Amino acid sequence: MELWRRLILLVCVCAAVFLSKVTSLSPLILTASADLAGRQERHDMPLNDYIARVTQGKLYRRDGREWEEILTKITALKEGKTVGKEWSKHLPADKYPMEVLFFRPDEAPVNTIAGYFRKDNDVLYVSLQKGQTTNYLELEYRTYSDDDFHFGGLSSYPHPPIYMFYPYRRYSLWIALLGLLLYILLPRKKDPEAIRYPLWRMVLGDIVAFLIAVPFFAFPFLITGGSLQAFTVGWPLFIFFWPFFFMGIWLLLISAWFAGFSIVITEDRLRLSTYKGKREYLYKDIEYFQPVIFKPPKWLIALSWTAALSGKGASRIGSTGRALILSGSEYSSLGIKMKNGSDLYINLTDMIGSDILKGSVKIIKAMKQAGVHEKSEVREIRSLGLETVRFPD
Image (cartoon, rainbow, N blue to C red):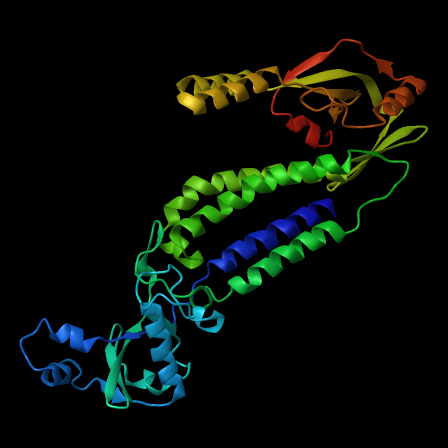
């Protein structure tokens, strides 16, 4: 259950990130005010002739409250006024300095014009008569494609509204919250006789794993601006970022091991349980037990000091601090040697020497009472500590 608890949360969070960047490339209609009189000033011809030339075969007369409201809102935008919550969703997502409103082709009132567009970037004009004044709206038929995505996101401006361009983002938060809810509510083992690691330490380990896994999973989609486009345009980003994502998954598996780890002491054996299953180790099959200290491998320490010495400024100070901590870190464990030659290691402290497995003294006491030989010699092992997250052969 501990493994499923973490995998469900990871899948939900990653699915939420992925869906939040899934784009809809359906056509949109950009609507703006057409200042034809202002444009005519740059041309040597009467205003009516200029309008006739520019709008030839592209002009449609419309009236009605909905068209007048669009004109009113665009005019308000040009004057720097707000347009209200209902109309704000039609504004560009990037706050592009352009008084433009987005509509889907099936939305009223632009659905009465949408059928006249012939191709992408096609422009039509709508005339609105108000008393003796004729106002014009310019409507552009825009289709975004994968070619509009590059490193840094969507390169075409203006950017469509979020609810149009990322239609599934509204579900992302709920999916992530569902995963978190299941992470909290899925049942945990409650054996009063079992010795296990504290819950808060397991949650802390999960947080660290997620802080590594989730951002590096998300970076390719965030940088490219689209989930599907990340695989077509930004695929090199996966080569750089996703190894760290898989490292986070690996840390999550380790966290699941310790979260599900429990020991039950009986008169003749130790019963161990993790998400991988259960094992029993008879005292008569144990050759001896002894204290073990795990230290980081020397190559890892040398690598950390190389990174520290090659840094500059504040980064060098931070790298030096991490190198110092790594150089002095060690984990105390209980090593159990089986008569078949295999080894079982049980972590007892964290890297600063604090006890993490309350009740470990009972394990040692039970083996002593069963006549298992105790070695007082401390064994030192330089490794990443993976020996403590597996059963003996």
